[in-house]
Length: 596
Image 1 (tube, helix red, strand yellow):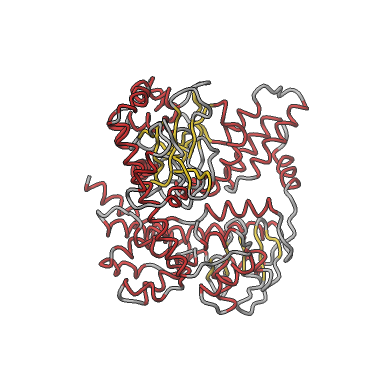
Image 2 (cartoon, one colour):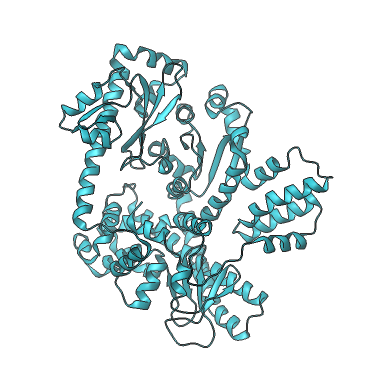
């Protein structure tokens, strides 16, 4: 996570905006007299769930918390970042430390790659790895998968890997930092992994960041992972993502399973869009990684292990993805590895028949309860209503509220009233928000960052010859201030090599990642054109949704005619822009079909 993301996570835009103007509730959002220009009727709105703001009046602009402070205080991005970071207690590193950390991390990537090669060579060639090779054979793993996943074997020795790496100019301290060795006392350590089948864990770019290890006897636990390191954070990792990412992008679907063997079995049998959470509950960080590739996620979990917690978290993910999360129910007691190796057709059918996470929640919660019993009906409402209230999409929320009403034979209006009354009342003064509310805001803010912005900037920075296409991009299309800063610098300077000089050093690491982010090299002009269309579409669609939500809440609360007119003035422009984008996309689709 970048320091910019950390600052955003610890900041609530409602608290910041309340320092500049008086906010009043408007549905799920807040409205106020705009702090940037004179007006009689509120046109300034805060959206807590997206941690964003927009002025529908004279300003006709919006953004995140950084752009709000920058505009109000007349600050540069770096100054705004440092002000908020100081307030929320985040330490900002100097550029010297950033460079030093980057060099250390490069050393760790290198040491992990050498360890991967060493373990793999041991598995393939060493006589002591016979038991590991026999296990792999029993599990039906092909040679193709052994090489693709770089499976390995750690010798039953206290220091064989350590000696191998020390001979290649790595220090004992670096081995410990990388999680490959365990320190017993100062200047003394031994190999962490001994006599185990090794699974290198790679990041999005294919760099080894950690390892999973399986015992070859009856020891407990069967699997262990690398400890937390500067490179490895289990909650952020998805096993197999480096091999699956292009297939996920092409098929526009990711299937999440639990274990290493599940992923390898899927890969062996031609299902390349499967990745694993490595036995952990799915996290918002993992979903954020997948959101760069697809909005469609299916969880292939055993019915005995999924549970209501998976359903609850699935709702949060749906809000971030703006798409239904589905659950493929496997036969009781089976895991994906077993199902796939037994019958590829059965696996395909289970994935195709995956049900929306809320339907799964209904099935789980109502199982075994008596719908003719008032007590059981009450239990069902108590458990399902909080899940339904989490759904941001009003159409889906209404659908499941109606389903619950029919199920327990209570009127829709009464259930809706119960749901509204059960929502916690938040006080939006300058006092601190509670930890639970902040956690929700953090998760949603983390997940709602738009990968299209990053893809667009990466293409522009890595393909200078495409600069002419950037004329169709407005800075306002970039919701994240750091992306907007980089784009503005890009537009103002001819040479891409000089852009960094225009940026605050707090963005340098982020900028470097964009310049080196691995993206497909073919059809770059076509990809950028598509990115720009999607960027435009996201901007105007987001604006339309915000305006519609505000109009609905104003109408319900009896907003003045002037306020409603003020909000409705942009309707024609939004409709025109979205219609134009739809026409352009249709033309592109027709052209692509002709070329097939």
